[in-house]
Image 1 (cartoon, one colour):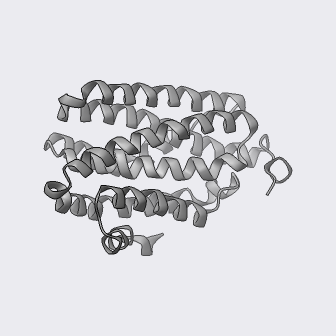
Image 2: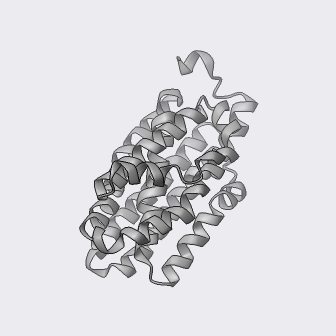
Image 3: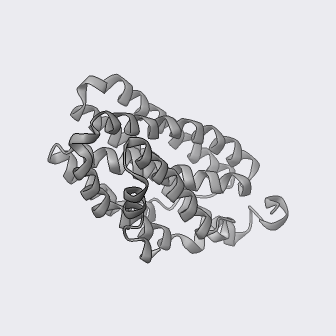
Length: 228
């Protein structure tokens, strides 16, 4: 569909929904920056690379803040912080326990795949300013996904069962999160079915690249999917 024809970017309805979605992406990028700084503490040998990823996420945050200002929208940060609360708590608990596998699964796989899928679905229906910003962000996010894939692939034999458990605990949260923003996403021209499909592709490809079999990927990605 043609976004310019079907979406009124300046309507009250669009801007209301955008305030929550914009808040989510801003909060998500800030959380990602914080998470990569923490992972750098757990993987000091990769400190420079991880801190560079954190700085990249901070730049993304500024870009999305500009997208909101462009539409004269104030992001709903209270909603956004609540949206990420459970994933944030799970990450913080894993970090406190020194569990780098769970930290990487949450940030470098789940959150990055979630972001990539959402941004890819958003780009065709975005306003021109936001489209340009988001296209640049997506290119960077694949680098972040690749870091997690590479580290976990190198340590696959020793982390396989831990990854399965971390997936079991955290993937169902994604479906809950998608349900929570389904109506707002639809207002922005983003269909939930497309978001789910794109996420499953990105996340499943990452799991396969790490070393899981096709059967294992299907089992892992189905975790909690009935709630979606």
